Length: 251
Image (cartoon, rainbow, N blue to C red; front, side):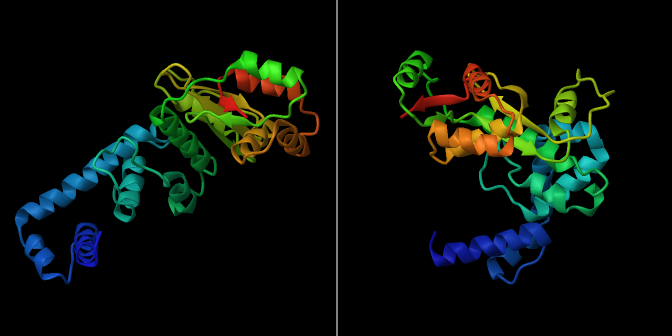
């Protein structure tokens, strides 16, 4: 984008967000009654997209609260793509800074899991790990590096039972009459066969996945996992991740 186009875009965004501009061309647009309708349409689309993309948050807080928070977010975060199917990146961090959410300290973590679902759902297709080949490599004593699948997502909240809360509120059929143990939880989301699945995950397994993502070998990743969770059974943890189709390959 060249400088004149950039200046016009900035001026247009200012008009869209705040209803004002110093640019003569954009001022001419602002003077047209249709522009007010356009502004309302844009923000309504953003709000509707956030309600759809964060269903667990929506169910927890109700429509009025969610619509207010979504509109506040949209006014500071215009869509970067014409399609709103992935709109809402950063909403969890926004909730963490929102005064109205301070009495709901678990809400950003729930929002993070809603976002993980969206990212897993929209991720690129990749082949699944060749488990038999991995077994051969490990049996031969090779310290390989596992590559997480493009659709694999994981999230740890060290203080709040976000997985239990999110799982119960992800669908209308969920059981919201829960009384979780108030402790940190993590979640793993995968999409092996065109369907996002999720399960509870330990803190050590999350650190293992972090290390794999960063290019660490299994031995180094296991060491980092044990530093977080000393009693972790590495073999059982690795089996859980492989069975969940969390990896695409190894090298």
